[in-house]
Amino acid sequence: MINQVVLPAQHGVSTSNSIYNKRSRISDSVLLVLIYLCASISILVLVGIMGYVFVRGIPAISLTFLTSVPSTIKGTFGIIGNIVNTLYIIVITLLIATPLGVGAAIYLNEYAKGGKIVRIIEFTTETLAGIPSIIFGLFGYVFFGITLGLGYSILTGALTLAIMVLPLITRTTQEALKTVPVSYRSGALGIGATKWYMIRTILLPSAMPGIVTGIILAIGRIVGESAALLFTAGSGYLLPKDFFGKVFESGGTLTIQLYLCMQKAKYSEAFGIAVVLLVIVLAINGLAKFLSHKFNTEVKES
Amino acid sequence: MNTNTVKISSSNLNLYYGSNHALKDVNLELYTNKITAFIGPSGCGKSTYLKTLNRMNDLVPNVKIEGEVLLDGENIYDQRVDTTLLRKKIGMVFQQPNPFPMSIYDNVAYGPRIHGIKNKSELDDIVEKSLKGAALWEEVSSRLKKSALGLSGGQQQRLCIARALAVEPEVLLMDEPTSALDPISTLKIEDLMDELKEKYTVAIVTHNMQQATRIADHTAFFLVGEIVEYAPTTELFTVPKDKRTEDYITGRFG
Image (cartoon, rainbow over all chains, first blue to last red):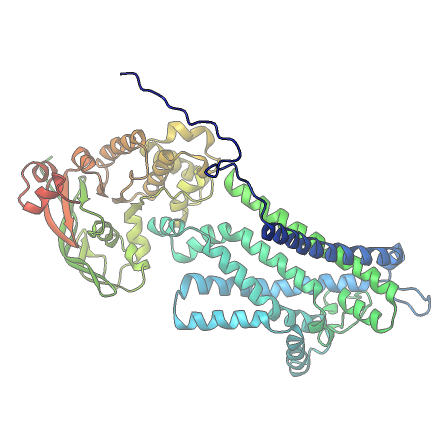
């Protein structure tokens, strides 16, 4: 009746059948070293460039640098005009591109499901996202600047950039809409919501984190853009005299001023601007992370 | 008890998903203030049929529907039908509890708001009445402003029922409402349905034959898109007329 329990004999290290034969394999170690090397190089390059820019740029930054405009009479240099222009371009571009992009995404995802036209539009959107920005600059200069007679102005630049970031906003909004469960849609429609009511009250709020992320990524692209702006927004560096009138005047962003400084071999100013740009981009990325995280926890907890 | 008033009747209803003939000449009547259960093996068309009753199938691409479904004598597939008004009259509760990512209060108030009720005290009344109707008021009255996603599965499903009740429907369609729930929550919802039929006409799809015998007045047995047998529940389960019904309810297949 009593079950005999037989324990296996304790093996030493030497038995050929034992699992204790841990070996080190050379190919594994070599690969491991290589992978560590790749990782370190990429991090070093990033840290190196940032460090170099900061070391060379920070001495150029002063209160005058951040709060004045270039003046030949006083012989001073400052970028406040460019900072203001950058803000103008960001706001106007987003005012144009966000409604268009979100609207297009809603149409593609909710209304036009699966048809041939949708595939063509999606293909076009993706292609649009891959076009070199100088081509947008060329088009913007000729169409908005010359044909529509807007000349070198913040509006020309913003319209050009709006076309450029449109695919980005459309795509991120589409992705965000796709993550909203079908059950939310049928739940709302099943108790008599119209489609538009459902989109307004359920879909858009649920997709908001994704949409916000898309907008912030778009801001990143706007801040970093130069080629598309050089021949559209121009290179004006003065502060606006008239809040709305400025829209029709030339205005160079920080990147344009950076480009001009490099052209004139004014490297310390160039590095100063580079520091400001890097700080802005880092702040934007941080904000994007923070906001998407905040939205996520809101959905889970409250 | 024995007076059966027809609320919804479908005649020669055929439904195709592309080339797949999913419902074949379905003729069925739902009676006012009665619970009708649809049973049958997976893929037999019982859920599909339920969805044709408030036109949720309209949302599926490549669906073709022939025949008619009369609600109080009006064909719901008529050109003149406003699906929003139709779905206000015929509410639906789904298999998976699907509360919206908003507060408990806003979930229940969602339907009334669609139909233009904005008055705060009026909404408060509707929310309280609907939650009481779904036997959930006691459990959530102190935390109406909290997210509905924090509720348990059973509570979420009762919230979805409350949400459907809030638009004061006449008919309630339930697509396997307890299949994702534990036995205790299931029992609560079954008790609830018994109360609901005093005011509403209820149709329920269920995989659970015991559930059908417990709650339904009439039961329809579906098989590959056809109704094999439709009878008062006790009759269908004790003296089935069709051999296939007998085989199914005795567990010989399905």
